[in-house]
Image 1 (tube, rainbow, N blue to C red):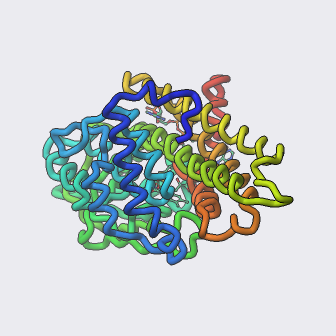
Image 2: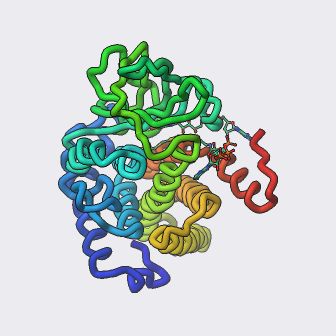
Length: 385
Ligand code: TGC
Ligand code: FAD
């Protein structure tokens, strides 16, 4: 929680059960260890199997493929509870579910679905999503990674950068241009000759998530690994719609964790012979945090309903993602100050959340790109180029 506007009344019994199960899981399997994982830049690979066991991978995809068959509100709640623990852990889950399993489900053949989805759902395999390149981040349509038709296979060349899960991934959904310059999705598997995934070191953010490059040096990709269902930039953008929605919920999970810590701390900590929560300035901060969390919860919930009806638009998703991350960053900073000196230590979660959220405000479309998506929707004039 918090649940200031009684939003639990809008949830089903199943939603409440799922949320409480994931919350307990995070308390048991993530929270006791996360400060040390983050400090040591350690990706706890065992979490992949455990996420599979609790159904955190692709919960919104059909049961036929080993997935949860749940609605988008349930998916949002799962992302919220995992990110209450850590944004890097949520990244692992949202990349697998929305960026690897979703495109295989949505654009893949039945054979591809049956081959990959059950193993990804169970956590037997870990996946990653390669769209960003060293020279093309906000502007993915400029990508240069490419493949040639060699008759019985494709030959893939190029490189991707900043790829979550890459160093440990068994499969990568990679976006590359064909000889006509049309973007397609290809499933690249670890072990294919010429494919490597060097790890990115020196991050001060998302330290418990492994990030890396994807390098393709004349990789022979079997023809049956091309996703046949959709080509063009719209295909990866549809995956981003789903992942950005999960991030909107997730970031508010991180905000809730910081708010709860600030509420507890200010009630316990005494200065001038009183709990610091008795001072108006501290109360103002708490009241404003709760207000922003509540507004974001309402936005996320309504967006979830629109997703369930298949009506959510990209600009609506941009508004929710952009708002949630900004709210979470502001709350993490305020909450840190409210803990005084203690707030800079790993005894409390704010510094870690704050540093993580600097990635979250950048990936899946930067804060400014989402503003421009909204600007283009409002005015009809895209201002990107
Ligand atoms: P634009 O001209 O607007 O569109 C090109 C074509 O794509 C279509 N399209 C969509 N189709 C379906 N759904 C959507 N959401 C779509 N968005 C665009 C569009 O209709 C058009 O189709 P067609 O047939 O007319 O060609 O494209 P643009 O090149 O001007 O770019 C627009 C822009 C800048 C908004 C977009 O490229 C963008 O969002 N950039 C940000 C890049 C980004 O978000 N990268 C994320 C990488 S993945 C990641 O960060 C994972 S981190 C995960 C974790 O660890 O949790
Ligand atoms: P740039 O695009 O170079 O942007 C730099 C600055 O310029 C930003 O402030 C941006 O807002 C601004 N800017 C750019 N264009 C405009 C414009 N038209 N108008 C105004 N301002 C503009 N990518 C993947 O494909 N898969 C992943 O799994 C993945 N995981 C990631 C994990 C982490 C930890 C991080 C940090 C990134 C990850 N990314 C991933 C990449 C992420 O999506 C990109 O970093 C992001 O899209 C921004 O691209 P860039 O870093 O190249 O910044």
